[in-house]
Image (cartoon, rainbow, N blue to C red; front, side, top):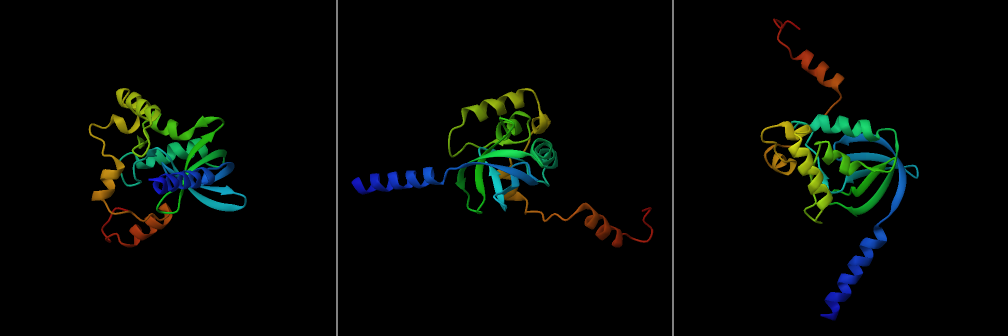
Length: 178
């Protein structure tokens, strides 16, 4: 029993020791819940904690990305690290000008609350408010949660719009009005 308690304390200490707050500049918005920041001259991928935004190829996925771009792109943000996920991304709370970006995405209806690992009453309340107001993705009749979407839709590799247009142009039939 003492060894289990000691292991628990050690794991708790590691999590506390890894927790860090720092300022960084957002240089890329990948989607509605993933950013790339510049911190101490290095790029770092950040996954917003407690939320899950629609995938880019999912309804409201690009809307969520655009909302995130409007809030944080090219801005200084405060990163409050919480963990490292299985993909090596830093999971964090992100704030800009003193306001929580994580909470704003849920409140705007641009992301689901995703506090499965740690109860988040604030996020649940914000999601309920967005649902009742039919904001963002909640304006859909039956929005599909991203964790359900990912099970039935393979990941999409995105190229620049110009490349997609050029590639499509070369494959159009001769009789196309384009």
